Structure formats: C-alpha cells, structure tokens
Image (tube, rainbow, N blue to C red):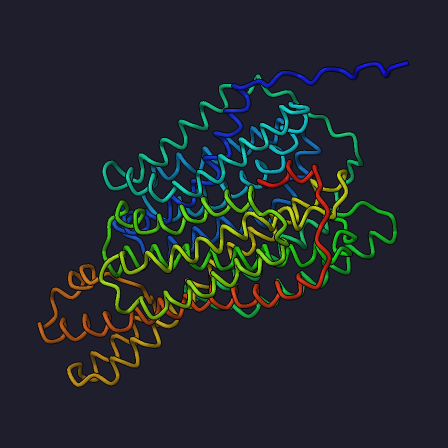
Amino acid sequence: MSAAPGPAAAPLDRRLAVLLAMAMFVLVVDTSLMNVSISAVVRDLDTTVSGVQSAIALEALVSAAFILIGSKVGDLVGRKRAYVLGLLGYATGAVAMTLAQGLTAIIVFWAVVGGLGASLLLPSMQSLIHGNFSGPAQKKVYALVGASASIAAAVGPLLGGFITTYLSWRVAFALEAVVIAVVLSGIRLVKDVPYTGDRSVDVVGAVLSALAMGGIVLGVLVWQEGGEAVGALIGVGAVALVVLVRWLLRRKRAGRPVLLDPDLFRSPLFRVGVSQQMLQQIALGGLMISLPIFLQMVLEYDAMAAGLSLAPLSLSMFAVALLAGKRAGARRPADLVLAGFGLGVVGVGALIPVVPRASTGWWLVVPLLVVGSGLGLLVSQLNNYTLSPISEERVSEAAGVNSAAGSFGLSFGLAFAGALMLGALAVGFTAQSDASTVLDSAQQEQVARALDEDAQLMSTTQLTELLADEPQAVQDEIVRINDEVRPRALQVALLLPLAAGLLGFVNALRMRRLPDPAPNSAVEGAAFG
C-alpha cells in the first residue's frame, strides 16, 4: 500500500515575501546612510565627527545588548507584535533623523530607540518567516530576505551618497520611514506564530548580558569623549561577563530557564565560528568608521563621492559572497575563511601606507577590492559553519547568539577605532605644536587645552574657518600640523581592523584542525540573522 500524500505546501504569498524583504533592506541600509552622511550631519547640526561616530557605535551596541532579550520578548508578547514594535522603533529613529536639530535627538531616538527596534525585528522576522511559509516557499522567502540584506549592504553607500548629495541626508531617512509605513500597511497579511515553550524569564541573565556588552563599549565611547570612569565602565562589563557565564552554568545545572543555553558552546565549531564572526565584524566596524571619515574629512568628499569611493569594498564583498556561496565546491570552509582573513590583512595592510599619500579615492580602489573579497569569503561561510552543528530546535537560539556576537563586534570596532583615531590625533597634535617654532608658548598651551577638552577631526576648510581671526602665520602652521597629524591618526585607527584580521587568520588555522561541519537545512532560516 502506498503512503498517503502529505498536505500540500502553502502557495507563496509574494506580497508578504516582498514586504519582509523591504523590512530587512531598511534594517541593513540604515547604518550605510549614516556613514556616508557624517560630514553633512556634522555641518547641518553643528556637531562633531566623534559625536556622530559615537551615535553609530551606540546603535549597534543597543542592538547587540538586547537582541537575546528581544527574542524572549517576542516569545512573551507574540512574534507579530514584536515585529510591529521593531518596525515602529526603526520608524521612530528614521523620523527623528528627518527632523533632528541636534545630536541628542539622534542618540536618543535613532541610536537607542532604533537599536531596540532592531533587537526586536531580527528574531521576530525569522520566526514569522518560519511560521508563515512552508516547504519550497519558505526556502524562497529566506533566500529573498537574505538577498535583500546583501543588496542593501552593497548599494547602501551609493544610494545614501546619491540622496545625501543631490537631495539631503534627511530625505534619505524620510524615505526609510516611508518604506516602513508601506511594510506596516501589509501587516494584516502576517499570521502570528504562537510560542508554546517555557514562558519563564531569566531576568538576571538578561541584565548581566546587557551590562557585559554595554559596559565594555560604553567605556570605550566615554574614553573617546574624554569622560571619566572609563576603567570602571569597562571593569563593570568584564565582571558582568564573568558573572553571566557562571550564572548561566548554575541555572542550567539546576534545570531552570536560562537566557541562552551554555551547552551551545560545547561545540568547538560553534565556539570558533562565533569568535570569527565577532572578529570579522570588528574589522568591518573599524573600516566603516575610518574610511568614510577619511574620505569626507581629509579628502573633503561629498556623500556621493564617498559612496563611490567605498563601492569597491561593498560591491566586491557582495559579488564574492555570492560566487563563493554557490561555487565553493569541495573546498573546505576553513580554507575559505583562512583565505578571507588573509585577504583582509593584505588589503588593510596596503591601505595603511596609502592613507598619507592618497589625494583621491582612486588610491583606495585596489586595497578595497582585496579587503572586500576577503570579507565576501567570510560572509559566504561563517553563518553556515557556526550554525551547522546545532540541532534544528536550537538553531534559532544559536542564531541569536551569533547575531549578538556580530553586533557586539561591529559596535566595538566602530567605537574603538574612533577612540584610537581621536587619541592619536590629540597626542600627535600636542607633540607637533610643542615642537613648533611658529607657535609661542601661550598658543601651544591653548592648543593643548583645546585638545584636552574636545579633540576633533576637522577638514582643512573647517579648520581654516575656525582660525580666521588668527595671524596668517599661525593659521598656516596649525593647518600644516593638522594635515600631517590627521592621516597618522587614521592610520592608527586602521590598526584595529588589521589586528582583528590577524587574530582571525590565526583562529582560522585552528579551524583547519577541526572537522568540517555537516550540512544543516535549518541554517537557511538563520543565515540573514
């Protein structure tokens, strides 16, 4: 007797699939818009580069610190409701950027509220795709949403540069809000996915996880801004991390609900994969803040020219990830990851000596193509490598940990590279001004005091305007010092992605000693998260 046929898979709801892809596109393109608009935002809001950079790092940090909590919130209040709240959080940030008159509004509404929106949006979207589609339709939607994220990363700098240059950065964020409104208009198409598991909440674990990631990155941001209690903040983060590990192990042994299952880390493939994901994102974060600042503040490019100059990085990353994902063949994932970090090290290593000599973005093309190719290889392999050893019922939780590690790495890279850059700027400027034969002792003391209170990266045009009341000889001397010190500060910032790449390369050698992961169909649903 032949077996009865199973129920037919539901047909693909194309409109819902497109709306989910639009939501993911906005989520990924948002930071690209901010990066290429740094100089325009600084000018229009009369703020500082470090202030905008801090907001960018804070947005990534909030997303990282709360993504595991956001997943649990979705379990408790409903995945559809969490999805709507996430979209509203992002819309709030976009509207705030459209109307902002100062940096405070950006930090509160774009970085904090928008970051919380992202922490709700990613895990809920994954659950909703799994619950609203089945069979081949589900795989198609996962692929569509993943492709939307990749395309957003590739075209974000170009799209943001075009809109910012020819319209306004405010228009770019207003368009984000419009896209979110369109997505919300189709919310009735989304079927909620009920959660049937344990509804207990590990409140202590949630607080410790936020303190661990938040303390470390906030400490770096406070150091960058010249604030106090830097060591205390970083210490709180480090202690919270240790206590979190012990707390999770103790609750797991007692059979009580935990924020995340520590047994996930028993898999060596998962451990090394998560660490590589974090190192990749640290490198990317360092590049994402250093390169746009170099292009906009040193070469004085507008957003369009900056976006075009960054295109070799984003487009090569997209193309190589697509190609390597389809044609890896019999090549070991560990070998591709090793090659990815190796190319990243070579590319960043080539950028460092280029920075003081580059007079146009053309100088960066070849190094950025090399770095982008390396990052593309990593993107094509790391999600699958990390999540493949995880069972299907736990892959969603593992994907959340993977996303949190990546977002933390991104926020740390953004914050630490910026702090290194401003620290090197202050040290170099003070040393050069003290050695100057043009500046008298009073002027040298004034420079030192100004740097101690508010070290900032400035374009030559901005600095010339600021010094308009000074004697011409003093103007020329300070501009000369700025032109010498600024590229060195950016070189120091690039040491962070270089160091992350070197650590990733060494870690990849360890990956080669581990067995290759077995294919896991459940990973398709976690790859974009």
